[in-house]
Length: 265
Image (tube, rainbow, N blue to C red; front, side, top):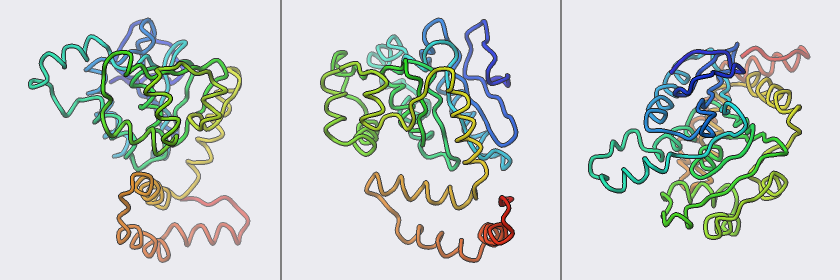
């Protein structure tokens, strides 16, 4: 868990790197030799980074990306085999499912900067982000059926709620590899750009998100996710709506609109 410039390629593999620039935090998976394959220690580091980011009120948006030519090859297959042999001794707090669900539940808006291929469990890691901006050379596949693995339920739910049942069946049951254009067509990618336009596209979206009202965004993100999961807490969502009508954010938003200037939240 190291602070480092977001775009700096690190020669030695490490747990995920964190950089903070203004209101943006960037987490970079950093095992490029192995296509950023995730190890157990990476999961523990990611959970710690999520806690650190959420505790910093100055951070308004999170970008998740990878070092090198791929976003991530997913969770290390050797670690999966070890867990299968000794499941009773596995640490549930550092499981892959816990990490992905924690990412989806972050109060801040999240962008996955898909700098290349995304495979296995990392397809769900990216899907847990609110937005996915990918390069036109990207590809993805979910090999669970080929490996004899029944994927964890919350990951299947995420696929179904984000991509629809038919696309989830196609990706899980066929283990078919699809290219960037198909990723965009089925809704896996929010935006598809040429490699040279990736950073500018991420910058534009991150700036836009960082300039919006953080409390309102956090509440609406929570409600949207709950709707998608069929578990909306209607009373809590209604209370957040009522609170927003008399809060500082709406006062600043209305004042900024009247003065024809960007709001300062």
